[in-house]
Image (cartoon, rainbow over all chains, first blue to last red; front, top):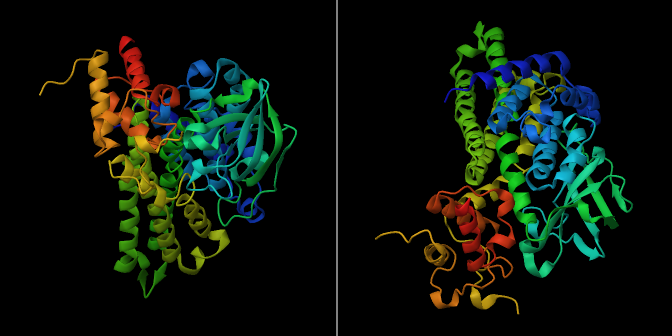
Length: 393
Length: 90
């Protein structure tokens, strides 16, 4: 389907912005694992963080498809995918839950600085023993008068080391399972909250993730984002949007890899001819092109569905699974085509490969995406079935 | 077979049919009482809720937002029926 004039205009705007403000390879930031604060600020100033947010909430109200196209454009034109990952984590696990579940007071308090780049949102759901089985979390929230007291540890907290506010999921009653989950807006300066230095990851190294500990963190009543019983819906909502949009940057990146691979295969000569003349090289490039053409419609479809107010949970899981696998394979192909040059840090494609590997894990592992699709197709859960007679007394 | 009307009884019949065929396969229908806790007893998890809301959207031509799919609106047949009635009332 064709993109609207408005989206094409946005695409051009984002491309021009990326070239002007987000240039440079970022190899040093990748090596040192440093967050690109100036790049973040520039994105805020340019309105990138407000693209999917309704105008009533201070955003640009352009919708999810427009945002997906913008992320695709950034992925093609910005080498620092860590920055783009941080932007996505901020938007889908931070901003959108506030837009969809937050009160007017919460929106007024947090959204202005989250949209203009002055603040960063982090996402605290995963725990050391609750990864794919995220709703088995043990971080607890208990009432103390009007306040809530949070205790627990969150691991792999996206943006944690640089976040000004964290969206934290906690159980208010472990006996209720996921029906007892709530979510909270936890300011960074909350007494009892501490965050580790950035974790030393293989890829997306400029996107800081850390371990957040909470010991007796007192959260006032207006810090409750999704009330007990709504937390799972809040989490699934953010994951539905995230899985749809975060992979768009990899679609853009695959396009950049394709352009570079074609250029290299036309210029690099061996045995008296360009290496692109050899089928073993050409076939890899053709497969890279096919992956782009099969990936883009999947992510765009999610944007169209969500913009129509429809569910896209299964479509998001399918897109996440397909695009992340495509990104890994195309990165491997790009490294192989460029040979020893592709293996060097300065060649950038080795970083693409490290970054792409993360995509098979974050936002739910690809194994879990298959579980989700199976469940949403109506196949039985692998967990023990519970019937009316199994309910707790 | 005609589909049940979109009044409370019709909604209840449709919801019960969905739950018995999708979640409680093989269960004696009499055990699915209108006040049986579905979410808080673990009979339905959040994936089951997504299938339920997908069914309700298609069957009753309504749009259900994520923030409307919490326990309050989905824990019992009674709650689901009331929720759908409120959506149909606009």
